[in-house]
Image (cartoon, rainbow, N blue to C red; front, side, top):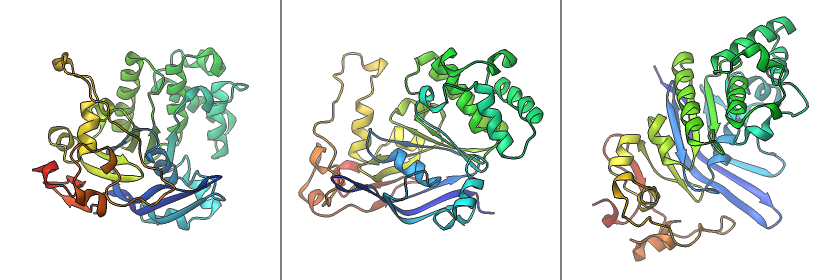
Amino acid sequence: MDNTLVSVRSLRVNLMSPHGIVHAVRNINFDIGRGEILGIVGESGCGKTMTAKSILRLHDERKILYGGSISFEGRDIFGLNQKELAAMRGADVAMIFQDPMTALNPLHRVGDQIGEMLVYRGASRAEAKEKTLALLEDVGIHPAAERYRQYPFEMSGGMLQRVMIALALSHKPKLLIADEPTTALDMTVQAQILKLLVDLQKKNNMSILIITHNFGIIAEICSRVAVMYAGVIVESGEVHEIFHEPRHPYTRDLMMSIPQPKAAHRKLLTIPGMPPDLREKISGCPYAPRCGQVQDACRVSAPEMRQGPDSHSYACCNEICYA
């Protein structure tokens, strides 16, 4: 039996902007297994969110051109009509957005906003309220009956993120997309939210796609990770493989940028330069202008994915990088 829930093949996302066509996502491939937590990590602007939102086709399709394919349980996402998409969103695939402060309507009580989703899917008002209270309890919001009547501005950022998780889980989706779920939260609340996601994933046996720039989150909850740079995936594999033996210079540089308790006197690495302009054609490796191990060949031809041990793969043409 095929354990693949989502399959992304040769995905390209081109965005029409006032300054030209932005090649935001360029020919990427990955799978999400059933019951798996996959992380996509990379610096801001690398295409992580563009990739995630493409699974639900949440972009303004008047300004977006897709290429390649995305299949969910064998269904072609790009072949669905708007009615079929609406049926899939929230029910089969749900998404938690970056900023819970702006994701909820400030003029409506949080309980009503969760209940509205349930009523839209066919529940009665009484059933929706009962299930909303149960969802609030599941995500650790107590007392649920009191919190149900509160407005978003009466809650903290961590509490609002729990509300967003409850909203996303209202129909027990098979895939939950979490886009920077701990942004703007302090470290204690971050740990609580991550533990909550893992607990709910096990309870509901769902898959999770985590979008983040934080390798700490990847290490905490993910089983596999894809490292993204300038619209392409440069390395992917099991989390323990990537952390113990990173093969791409960008992955190594990102890890060297993380403060290490056991290396208090080591100077933190800062990656020089800027990512390439995605409106222009990129020759060679996209990381070449910033790479400390660049060779002439890196600037000429785009590297293909090399298969390492187990599921580990990486796009680097420099033998020095993985010797």
